[in-house]
Structures are given as structure tokens and as C-alpha cells.
Length: 208
Image (cartoon, rainbow, N blue to C red):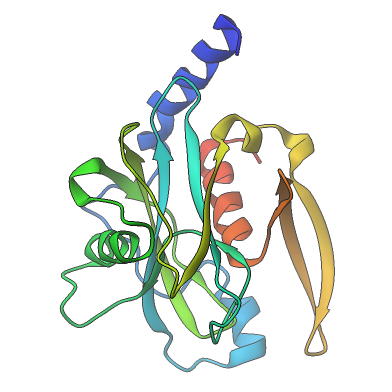
């Protein structure tokens, strides 16, 4: 990466916290896509969940993703952020995201610095997800937990800042037409809820 591009990325990262909801003001349900999900699921209460949108520090900062194992009941084989359902013992969404990340990819909590939140997002599986954006230490060691995660991989954050890498399309689902987005990098297709949350991040940063 040339010096000018490296400096531009650093400028983006330094401005990132200002684009997020502060840790002192977590988002509340409903999700920003509630109207769309209500057409499919109705207005029944959604179960709480949280994910970690983790940005690994370094010369070329990278977002951390997982590939879910093929035998899981929902979203099997799909690309996702580390995270999952909130437990009663979790103090808040940050606690859920950190616990799930430790369970799924071995991410030690002292290697994570939470920065803020994105807006809540509702999934087709009936969850209202709180995305927690955080920095991950460059030295953090990540490994998949086979029961839940088939693979851990990372994508340079700069990739998502290029408009040409965002693909928009429409799909038919249960008789409804849904606007979708996706990214493809290194043979991995990032779509569905994960891509939608990424789009929310880019929109809040002014890149989409």
C-alpha cells in the first residue's frame, strides 16, 4: 500500500468513532429494517443478539469474518461476523458480542477495544441484532471453534470503501421483493444480514 493510501485509511479510521452510536447510548429495537421484516415476520418481539464488527489493527486494517459450519440450524455455511444470541447473564450487547467472539474464534477480551454501535438490524431468523464495532489488537490470535465456525478470514477495510465492490440487487423471498447488497472477496460471498450491517456502517461513514 502506498503512503498516500495508507494515510487516507488512517484518516478514515480516526473518524470512525464519530460515525457510530456511542457506547453510552446503545441502540434499541426495532431495527432499521423493521418495516421490511414486519412484512415477512409480523410484529412479534424479536430475540436479542449481538455481533462484533472487529477491525484488526495494523498497516492494512482488516475486518474479521467467520464462515458458519454447514450443520448449523440457521444460516449454515454463510459468512458472518462473530456473535450470536444474548444470554440472560450478559450485561449488555457488548458483553454478548465479546462472549460470543471468544467462544467462536478464541478472541481474548483484553485484545478488543469497543468503539460504539451501529443501528439494530432484524434478521429473517427472528433476531434483533446489535452490531458492536471494535478495534482488535494486531497481535490477537484467532482460530475457529469447529462446532460453530468452519473458517475465520479477514478482508482489508479499504476493500469496502471502494464503491465498485458493493453490488446491489433484488431477490424474491416468500412472495416479497427484497433489496439486497453483497460483496465478494477472495472467493467469499458476503451477503444477507452481514452485508446489510456493513452497508449501514458505510452509510454512517458517508461511503454509501
